[in-house]
Image (tube, rainbow, N blue to C red; front, side, top):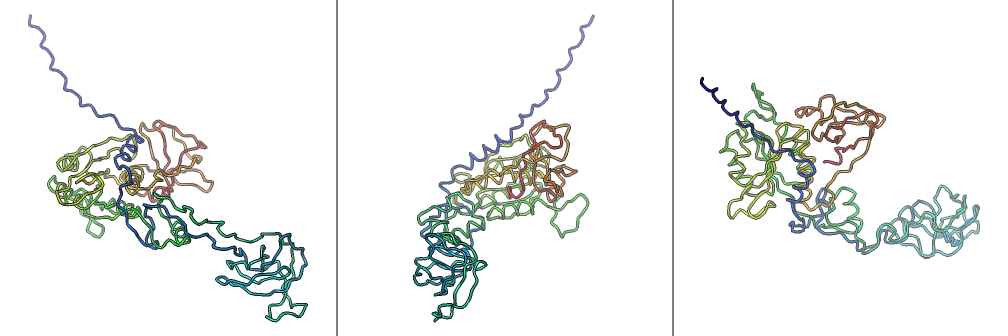
Length: 439
């Protein structure tokens, strides 16, 4: 009897690397961006510093305000122990903002206006709504300023802004690493800072890959789509104060992708791409980066935006240095789906660039807000779902959370951060990241 023939061995099933936790991936990116202390700095006009990151602290050389001044339109009086309602005082001088008055004696008043310096001797201001202006009953009104009757009791120090109460000379008003907003520029100007030392802008080369991509304005042929990622990512980079070199759309060919990477690395600190980092036959970004530098491809346990490519591209000798290391430019490859591309930028690329700029505040603020929805089955990945606030301040989800539904990002007020497997009942308090904190 012939033996039963042996069955051929079953083909081995390739194993996938486990998905990397989101926080672990973020920490690795921030560690790679390194210490900002060696970041090149430049001096710029305070007028032109919006969105820049301070490379040196701003120290006030003056007191703000520089002298005691009035917080109201009204009169200045000498009232070390207060004055009773009904008191009548002659008005001896008029002081507008920018003028310096004469010393004021007890029993006299000075007409003055908001921001005007208090005359020497004065220690209180009476707002004009509590003043009744009348002729000088003593007939000594040589200056034609009349007199004033107080309609209310005066307390010592009322409506006086003291010298240095906002900023004292020598105080640090803005620390190094602070990202400058409009209020910061005003504060720097208030202490006389005409120039600010800021980190040099991060130079980012941007391109998209895909033969299916067209630019708005071109006829939409069958099988093609308009390239939204180019506009979204360019706008986000500009919002971070980056210098953007837009290399457009690169064809789905290995040689074209390698050539684009070499060009991008010449004068950039970071190369940012969208598309081409998955496992398809036309995904040429990964082999191109490996051929031109080094690559670490992650599968991140987040939704949307699982695939993320991180590495560096070599720069040809003599073409300068970038932030990726000696002779290198950093590389970050984002997924091609528009929502995945946008969310991975906001949550991973943005803090990476801020760290490169030397910023100290990297994490967005989170707010616990009540849910107005139910979620019975949680995703196995950490899920950043698009939501907005209803009239009662509760979180409402967009109906379609697909990674290609860009309308959900334009509709949303922010992202709800849901843990893997998390279910939700109405009223549950959930961490909410406003888009205003991420741009």
